[in-house]
Length: 66
Image (cartoon, rainbow, N blue to C red):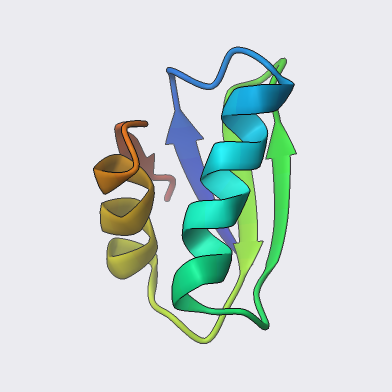
């Protein structure tokens, strides 16, 4: 499980956009968005840096949590 910090996630629409961006690159991914804590948990075949880039390119700057 990979956790990203995504400060710009503020609503359900933002969460849906983030999820859609990840699923476009890995349709098998499991994506959970926690709007209150501004975190995204992803179970994916892609690595954390790639996922952070995907989310950032969707307009939601993301950083990989250690």
